[in-house]
Image 1: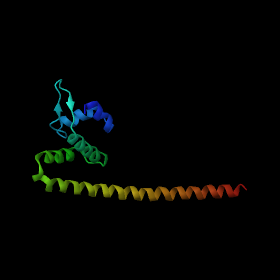
Image 2: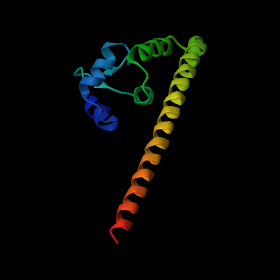
Image 3: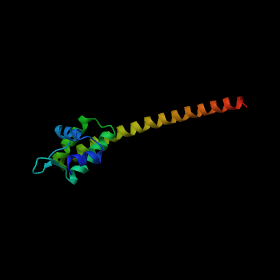
Amino acid sequence: MEIGQVSERFKIKSHTLRYYESIGLIQNIERDASGKRTYSEKDLVWLDMIMRLRATGMPIEKMKTYSKLRYMGDATATERKIILKEHLENIESEIQKLTEMQTYVTYKIKVYEEMETKVHDKGK
């Protein structure tokens, strides 16, 4: 796949893909005879992982560390697992915070609904 197709597929700018390559998140992208980047299926699977890490709030520096370890091979599985476990803890913490906020906002909506009911009942 060419960079424009990849950009469209993942809903990111071509510039972002080139940036990810420049900082080492994506490595060894093949080029065709005219020098255009061509992404393999393996590249797309890795890019999907990068996008998921980013969407779940992993900082770029942590992603760079994870990526570097990934490109070093299977011998780094333990280190990568540790990074992902830490990230999962962060995700779970965020979910807990969001759930607490959801509960609070739901409560406030009910308070306003009760206020509306009282105002409407007075008007009758």
